[in-house]
Amino acid sequence: MTFDQPAPDLACALIGATMTVRGCAGLITETEAYTPDDPASHSYPGRTNRNASMFGPAGHAYVYRIYGLHWCLNVVGAPGHAVLIRALEPIAGLADMESRRGRQPLTQGPGMLAQALGVTGADDGRPFGPPDFHITPGAPRGIVTGPRIGITRATDRPWRFGLAGSRFLSKPFPAASG
Image 1: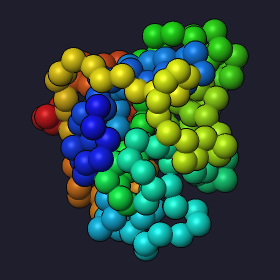
Image 2: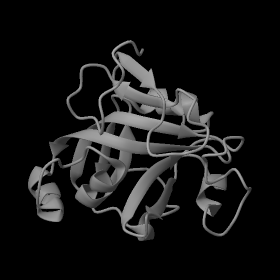
Image 3: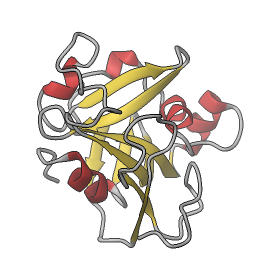
Image 4: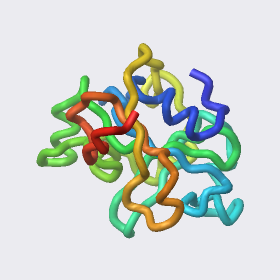
């Protein structure tokens, strides 16, 4: 998979890919794209200590805390571009995911997903690669699009992408998307 590309393109390419983290794996079902010219992006103000991973090598993780509580996992694309992994369909390591989350839904939302996979700030800047932290491309799939959620700026950009027909989404997509 080519990671060094604009976030909207990478966000589409990640739908249907398999993400593996420490023996737990899942099919990526929902992503959101963030670019350096996007007021909703952490990279919008330029490089800082907090967002340095977004300006590092493509194919690395950008991990940050939201609301001071939940870790969120992103895949870095072109410099300043990142893709938030919002949801995945568990396919391996379910017992470990459940032991970390303790309840359903398991991986339908970025904070729940990171918790289920055991992702923390220690993973920020980590390269995606075998054996225990990697992404395997999937077959082309039907993709639906819509506005990003949980943000207050640049809400008009249809940069939320989902696997058509998946029940493993953080929120349903509008009926006429795609």
